[in-house]
Length: 474
Image (cartoon, rainbow, N blue to C red; front, side):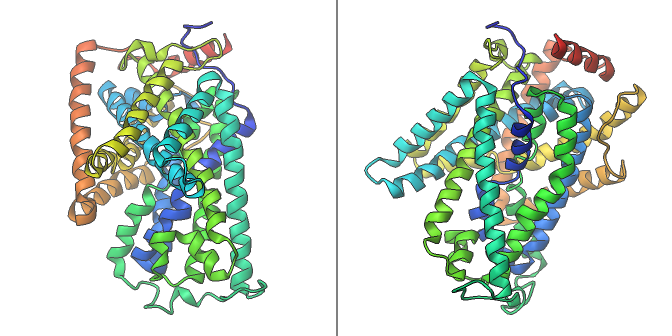
């Protein structure tokens, strides 16, 4: 009934499957990858391979915890149990803030495309209309989010597969009217590493944030039947998804387009490659695909932010109102609260000077890395508890604890590199500032509140699993 605090299990198998696929395909693949290629040249493949490997390892660790104890709070809940309530509070609110800031970014990107098609409607109007429409779909039933995301993901997958097929034909020289063939672009313009190893590391920072969203499936699966099974399947398939969608398509781009082509940073990798091949109306085709991608990301941002703040509410780390659900199991107040902040940032993007929104955006610059680090530390500590209490592990981290420690060591190294690199220093400083504030607030509030309703530091994971199963069955 309305006012209850339980989420529904309204997502179907096909929804969760497509959400797991959609999470790894963002507008960054179609547009942002052009900047990464211009930075590192053909060696951008190494950057994508490294970033992809890191994400695969993090997803495996998250999958281990999520399959054993599915929860809409995902890694925030696991940090709460494994590290401390202050950690769950901090990473949960930082993650919520990240997705709230994604809302104006994606709304503005979509509005820019629509405004170029229908110039009579102001860009800010398009941004508010798109955000409003997707908010409405998230308010009534989780299946609405799943259905929209299913079709968004399907269109993105079709677009990528079509691009790969066209690219392969162009490389083989059999595409009618094609202007390029072969793979000589990989080395004929300054070599494979034209800008050195440092440029590859810089490109890793660009590519890393393209993968943010892969973890959404562990949040969404909590609102489906048999979540452990779906999480296990999604985390096992992340390797081929990254390999096909990112590595294969980027390989084709750098094989067909000179890495120093000035169109890459401006037009994006897909449009530049299609133009080079001679595909007519390449800009319109890519604009349609990017519009679908940003709508998908905006849809996911609204959903993910609302579920994270809902989880924080259930643990007593956010206002209690956000944990109320409707008769259909939707945390409507959590959706509206997240959307309200998103609306304010959309308005700020158009009303205030550009520097204001850029500063806000910089506060989320390194949150992805902080989330990955927290996931790794949580899995390192939680694995011992899960095994000690005989909790079933449908998914297990490879080579534990060696690969877990490898991730824990690598992420601070990347953060240090960001601090030394002028282009990313401001983003890191702003992220560090907001993270420090949230952590201090988290420590103060959680110490004052004592053990929360979701767990006490002495409570066992196995008892939480039994409680979760009981709630689901009831």
